[in-house]
Amino acid sequence: MIKPLTSLRFVFAFMVFMSHYILFDKETNPFLHHIFYEGYVGVSFFFVLSGFILAYVYQQSFKENKVSKRFFYVARLARIYPLHILTMLIWVYMRKDHPLNEPYITNFISNIFLVQSFYPTEEIRFNAASWSLSTEMFFYLLFPFLIAWFTTMKHRFLVVFTAISVLVLLLCPILSGSKNEEWFLYSFPPVRLLDFILGILFYNICQTNKVKNLVKSISPTLLELLVIALFLVFYTSAYFIPQVYRHSLWYWIPVGLFISGFYLQAGKIAKFLSNDTFVWLGEISFAFYLFHEIVIWYTDRALFLLGIDVDRPIIFMLGVTFTIIVSGFSLKYVEKPANRWVKQRFNKPIASTV
Image (cartoon, rainbow, N blue to C red; front, side, top):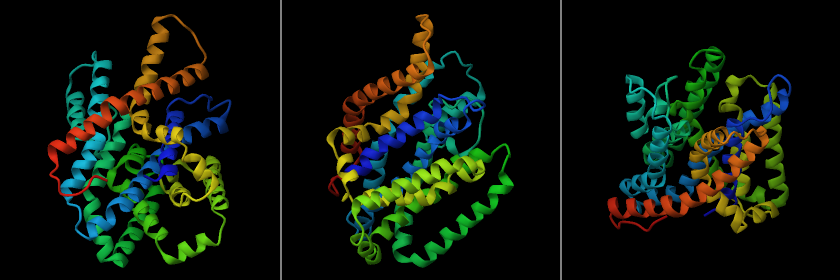
């Protein structure tokens, strides 16, 4: 476990929460509205981090044939599928009055098989946050093949990645303002695969001697402060950047450097983030992400039924608090037991658990 990066998962899950419960009106407080809205960068962080961490854990093992694709796929399914199904069924209950029409059934099936992010729709999405799991599952399916390609034909891999990235960049002004702009640039798995690959590349850059020697010449704490400052500069200045570039591309470099900086675990900020409490918050971040909209919905519903009128900041704080509590129970009583059961049921003892 890379403790600082685990802890930071909660920070970015909280930012996603911010983007879904904005406390400031766009017309009266445009910049503060932007600060909350832009929290969706948390998704970019998770996609890049996913590629980075999977390369860290599995790249050498795949290269040396110490782990099988079956083992990898079962581990990934065990990680995300049980909680996905649970939160999806909760949303089915929440929206039990929705007519059982064709879009509902189609989206229900696509959610079960985690393919919902492959097509745009304005119909019910159930737990909307799970679209990113659909995209992540696409990454997982391709990861063993991407790693094999990268380790055997690195230069060709980099050329193809660069060419596709440039193509997406050129498509941005064409897609700007179109009906499917957000879906294609923000959700469509083949496009967001670039974020995932970027994570793999940043991990491998961190392993080069030039980077290791450079890092040795810089104060680790100073390096952490620099990557934080760079991220904040990009985050705040995004206010002046067209939305079409901010779905993903704008944050590639700051997010990649941010993750790389804390991967070293050497500075004072990294040591602070390695505190057990912060690590625990990072461990519940997956549940926090999947449960947060459910908790907000039930919090609003409960206050309405009780006839209690409170300000949005109070609902925001209640939502964060309740989501942390629910996520803690989820980690202990759902995620960990389900993860063990799936691995024991579907995996053969062919490699040590990682």
